[in-house]
Amino acid sequence: MTGAVRAVAAAAVLAGTGASAVAAPTPVVSPYIDPGDGGVPRVGSPARGYAGVWSDVPSSVAYAWERCRASCEAIPGASGADYTPTAADGGVALRLRVTARYPSSASATAYSQESAPVAPAAPSEAPAPRSDQAAPAPPAPTPTPDGRAAPVPSPPAAAAPPSAVPASAGWLRMRTARRTGGYGRRIVVAGFVDQGAAGRTIDVIDPSGTLVGRARAAADGSFRTSAAAFLPGTWTARTGAATASFPVSVRPRVTLARVTRAVRRPGVVAVTGRIAPGVSGKFVELQYLDPRRGWRAWRRVRTGPGGRFRVARVLARTPGVDPFTLRLRVGVPVDVGWIFAPAVSPVRAVRAR
Image (cartoon, rainbow, N blue to C red; front, side, top):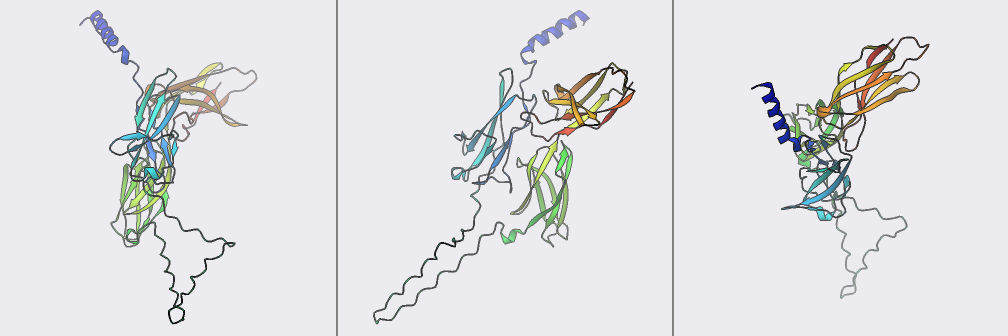
């Protein structure tokens, strides 16, 4: 095939795919529901919805909560990131619908997985009588036909308060959890169960309900495992009916590919790299260390496809200033629909001459 024919063929392919040259945004991390402590949504306990992460960062996101039986129906008025299940949700699953909107007026919709059925409200102890409230009077004795007073029946014994965990379930306590990790990096989860429960299985579950780690208890009841951290929120360790929850924060990873090592003023200082997850449209900023005011933002850009970025700044000539070392890093701040904690890259030094 000649060069001209190749050019014509390439043009035909591009023309045929022109409508899809800019792909519609899709979730890199799907929306999910964080039910909070225990890992199960409960009547009266707030649940948190996460918008997930999109291949192109949206300008705004909209939430809608749904009840799911044979099919899913929108819950009237439930349009925030948080939702507190009511008695009407008891026994049914919840689902979150997220609509991402973009400056071009385009939009895309994604759904979370259905949650576990909503559990009843946690039992609460009966309130103690107020000091200004008189105790109820005992029933008056009822006279018998011969004129003597009949014995007053004793009040029933108070029922023992229900236990949050059945006795047969044992108990579970977290000893440590490395609660902050880079995207996709492993975090450490460790704790204790009943002594003598050697071999008992402990599951580690992320906020979406996905099993991400598993451990077995040692003879002294201790356990230790690790799990890859992709989702921030409330994680749960579970064995039988015993659970223990702990928060996990996830930071994006920032990798620098090339940094200007030295520049002659006036000249350009440039940094290239990428972030993970690899999304386009995410703000990253070049920061420099001011000896008097700490780290300062210098230039902000958006990532391109795959999370790649190039951020540059002209270093102006300053008369009378001797050569010096400039310390730089790239920061990833919180943005619209961004579920991760802020992160920064390693620091790099640039010699300014």
